[in-house]
Image (cartoon, rainbow, N blue to C red):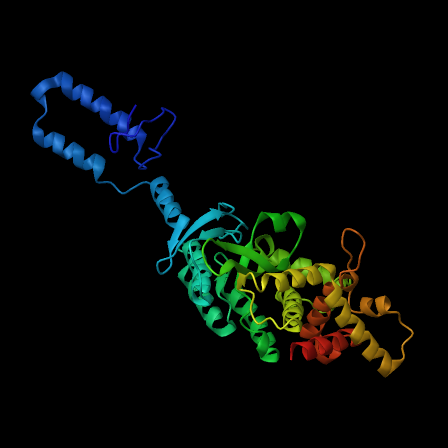
Length: 384
């Protein structure tokens, strides 16, 4: 069987033509009509044929066709004489507490030689995915981009009022740490993998977003914060999870549905301090010269060496002032049980100590634990 519209060869299992999107069921029906017409000779006038043709070919394209059309547009992007082609990414169907936007698209680009084009690629990838998102949330995302210097924000299905309150976390933090504004490229709802693992939010400092085939630069890097869709699209579940964790001592006291973002911002600030310690002002574009430095940063970030140095310096400062009998681990544990989290090999994750210390000071100010205040003081000094 062939599609009557484009003559593409069809299998009977196709309801729609995979080539043009036209309904194969309609094609089959039309062939049947034509056989009836042939048998009846001139019994149906020419005007009847014209009307039939109009009805068959002047209908609104099916959803299947429009979906394919959009996917084709997402596959390539033209950025000022530079072609970027979508290489890989997760395909998600929205529904319930699942976001339609994905965070792991990767591109291959012919040529990118400016930060402006790199930022444009990140922005376009975000925009192409949010065309069906509510206008109110899109307008709020634009406001956040301007206010907080985040290149691309995708909170598509999130409640607008909830998102507005979430933005105040960034506002408060950037008022206190203005020099850290502008490093975060993406704030995105994230899907299934996070939900299954029970993670509420996460920070990914280095993500290879685009490979560049012919340029002095080799990679475009995204620095991302993720919000689990299973929690941030279900504020009631998030409220129960954060309050229970706070009461149990897993989180600092007084945790709210907004404060997990403060925890992730603690990771973000720690990473920016690490960049500054190497004299790096941007990791957006990677070339042969800064690749080795970025590799070293990656090693230090993974090993926890830099974060451990911050915590140890803060502990020494605390001991000078109080001559406490608490060990450094006991001192860290006063913040929360998550402040002494370990990785799968049993090693302490000192960056979680920093994130929890920042979380505590964000929530409780001067009433935060001494360990939190001393750690944040060292962090602030390194950021300045």
